[in-house]
Amino acid sequence: MEYRLEKMAEFFENRLDGYDAHMLNEIDSAGEFYAFTASCLPKECCHVLDLGCGTGLEMEFYLKSNPDAHITGIDLSYGMLEEMKKKFDPAQITLIRGSYFDVPFGEGVYDAAVSVESLHHFTEEEKIPLYRKLHGALKENGYFILTDYFADSGEQERFFQSELIRMKKEQGLADHVFYHYDTPFTAAHEMQCLRDAGFSYVEEMQSWGSTHTLKAMK
Image (cartoon, rainbow, N blue to C red):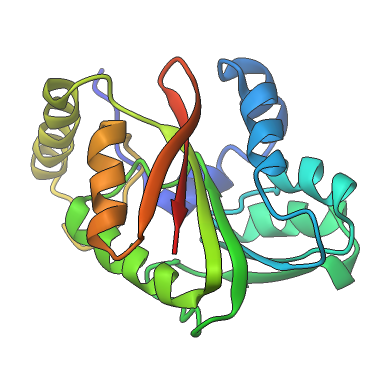
C-alpha cells in the first residue's frame, strides 16, 4: 500500500506520543547531532530563533549550558509547542504557532538562528525567500545553524521531488498545502541556496551519514 501523504501539522500531532524517544533513539546519531548543534550556538546571553522547534530537543542541550539565552520557537504543531512549554522556564522561551514562511521575524532581532530536521521538506522557491527573511532578522555578525537530512546525490534529490509531485497528483492533493514527505537537497545545493539568499559565508561543520550541520554567516 502506498504511503498516504498527511498535512505537515497533522503528521506531527499524530505522532506526539513517543516523539522525543523516537527522534533520539531511532534516528542515527541523533544524540550526537542535537548536542553538537547546541554547542554551535552563542555561549553568552543572547536571543536565538528556532525554526521548526518541535518539542525543543536541541534546546534541552542548549539551555542547560546557557540558561541566560532566550529562545523564540516557531512550529506548526500545537501539541509539539505544548510539550516544549513543559520543559522550560517560561522566561526562557517565546513560542509561536504558525508557519515560519508566514511569521514575520523582524529586522536585526536575533543573535543566531537554528533549525534541526525541519527544512528538508521544501523547494528552492520556498527556501530562498525564507532564508532572505532570516538573513534580515539576524543582527550584525549573526549566524544560522542548520542541522538536517540531506540527499546523497543530485539524482536522489530529483527522485524525492518527483515522487512528491507524483503522489500529490495521484492522491488529488492541493499544491499550496505542506505535506509531510522528505525532499532533501544535497548539502551543496542547500549551501548555494543560503548564499543566494545573501549569507556571506557558508560552511559545513560536521556530518553523520546523511545528516549534516551547516553554518551560514550574515
